[in-house]
Length: 56
Figure 1: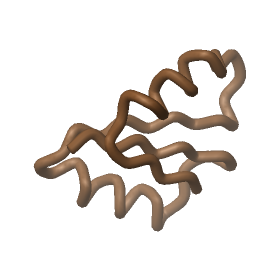
Figure 2 (figure 1 turned 30 degrees about the horizontal axis):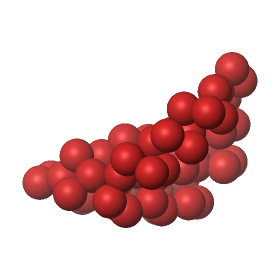
Figure 3 (figure 1 turned 135 degrees about the horizontal axis):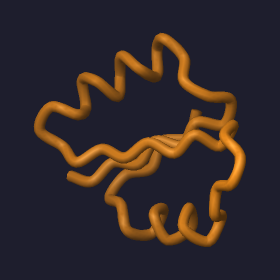
């Protein structure tokens, strides 16, 4: 399964733990919106290309 995590305020302890668990056996991608220079067009493309999207 392809899982996308979108972090609006950067990583946190809980999100890191869950991402770590889900990384075993799944394809996981993390987008940190608190970083500058993010292409929102690529974020939208990623949302539609993943099976599950989790927003933090």
